[in-house]
Length: 354
Image (cartoon, rainbow, N blue to C red; front, side, top):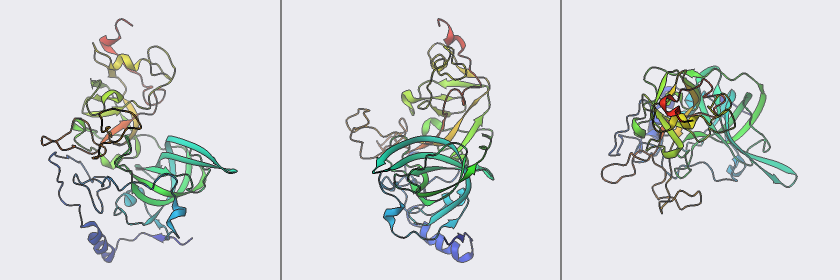
C-alpha cells in the first residue's frame, strides 16, 4: 500500500482555500453561535448555521469502502489534521497507532458463515491525548468481524464524514467512516484530560464550547453543583452543572447500592431530585462530544416517528422568528456511574426522606 505523508506547501494551501471557499462564510443563523473554536464539520458546503448540511451524512447502513471502488492511497495525518479536511474531499486518511478509549455500541449479524460487526466508538492519539475522534465502522468495513474493545491499539484508514442531521443524538458529528482497521496490540488508555478553567459553558445549548477536546475523555474537577436537574436542552436525559456544562445521562445505569455508591446509579436520582442541591464533590468524567435532538413531526418521541424536516436541533435554542435554533452543541457523556461518577456525590437536602 502506498502511503502519502501530508505536507502543507504553498500550492496545497492555495488548493485548500479554493475548496473551502463555498458556503463557509459568516454564520447566518439568527442565534449567536458563540463557538470558542472551529465549528466541527464547517468545511466545504456548510449549512446556514455554519455546520454540516443535514444530508452530508455517513454512508447508509450496509455500505462500506468496498462499494466505493478502488480506494485512493491513504494520507498519513494526525487526528487534528484529519478534522480540518474539506467535507466530501474523499481523501483517505491514515491514523497510526491510535487507541480505543470508549465503545458506544456494537451490533452483530451473521452473513452466511461469516459474522459481521457494525460499531461506533472513540479513539485517541496517545502521543497527542487532546486529539480524539468518533469512528463509525459499518458491516463490511474490514475486518468485517472486528469487535472494538477499550485499550486496542490500531491503525485506522478511512474517510472523514459527518453523521446525518437526522441521526438521533449524534447528528452532525464529525468522524471517520469507510474504515479499514489494523489491530496492533493493546495499550493503556491515556489519562482523562484535565479541563481548562471556564470549560464547557454551552449557554443552554446555544454554544459549542471547547471543540479542541472533542472525541476525548475529560475530567472536570469538583466540587460541582447541579444547577438544573432537567435542562430544556436535554430534557429527561441529562442535567446541567455550574458553569453551564451539560451532562448526558443516557449511558448511566446499572446495579449498585441505594445511595449510588461505586458501581451503581440509583442514588443519582437524589442528586437530581427536587428539594435540594446536588453536588459532585470530586468532579465528574466522561467523553466530550456533540449532541443534537431529532424531534418527531407529530410531536411524539418514538424511535420510528417521522422526523421533522429540519433534522436535529438543540431544544430551547429556537430563534425568535421560528427558526430551528442551534443544530448541535457540545456536552459531557459519562459512560457509567462505576467509573465516571465513582468519585461520589452529595445529594444535599434532597436525600432527606430516603
